[in-house]
Image 1: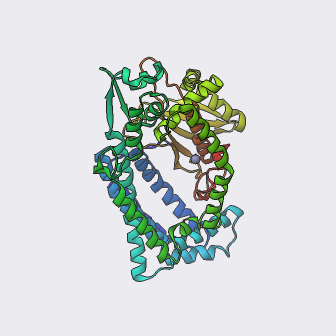
Image 2: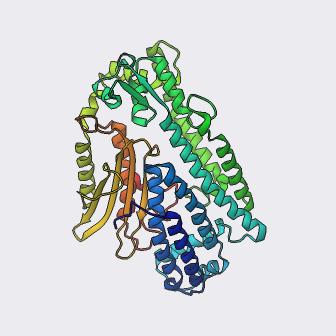
Image 3: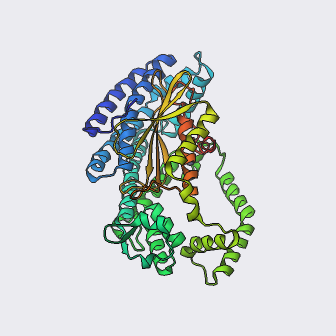
Length: 466
Ligand SMILES: [Zn+2]
């Protein structure tokens, strides 16, 4: 269950695995029951998935040009492989015939979902249309990688050197985070950005950093236009529309919700409008109060700063006074004991070499033995994609226990001091662990419905709330 974090020759590995995979899919298409159709495909995808998930994980958390170039070569191979399998008409018929065989409830569900996904993958298309559909998918996989690459590079590119005086409003902990050998340097990493917005008294500085942050990878703003994502986004949008049209949908949103819990795009719009109706009055009141307190016309880069000041005045509450109570060790032991109490499992950190010294390897056990593993990569770091997420390395398959990757971009330790987490960061950490537990605590032994697999994507946020 230990992932190989030093993959070699990834293009060749994926090429070999997908070629072998197509042979297995062709054999499976001749099958007539669960064991001869689904089981071999699951086994093959399980192995392929271990490779693709590690490659995509490393590309997201340890970005480097050389690996990314190799990684990019694997994307068309993987996309085309899945296109071939999901448009294999004989295999589609084999799945449909499984409905007349003896299946348990979970198997029946998987077969039903698979048949739906064959349709959305274009199994019903013929000739030129089918080729065009596959070409769009291949192109989209490359565009998505380019989009992420630009976003990451634009974030990493921007830096600014400052003196302590220019960082007026900062406390000792915030200063420690941006201290360099000769002074202070701020960047667009989330924990650093949030500190500028919350504490920096200098409005011009807040404005500059805000504009740099929101205009990353665009044609406007402060960061380099070299990483402009506009053309990429335009192409993604137009290809998605074309895909939807080919499949007979009015637009991409209609295609996208087909496999989700929500029933129509109108339902989504109604939900959002309802949210606005219910929250706008309160939000307006709070904004008016903040405006009055600030005494200046509030700009977007003023909101967090003045909110913090107002909270201090009204409630004697200072965010920065809270963080010393949340050093990483305490937060993690609180998180682990909450999970242990809720689910009757235990979490233990084990020593294992991964791809970065900061990664924690957590083994999860229950009274019957090993349940699974979580690889936790907590701190913000250059060359790591922004945001927080959970990804699966493997699902529960036979004797193989589920393994999940949890990635965050939280405050890191500073010289001689442990990482101190903000309250919002702790919420993020708990949330991502919710996703990981959903994946790891599964009892479903079929990989296409185990853990987070096969869950409608608008439903996956429910289990992560505990
Ligand atoms: Zn989530």
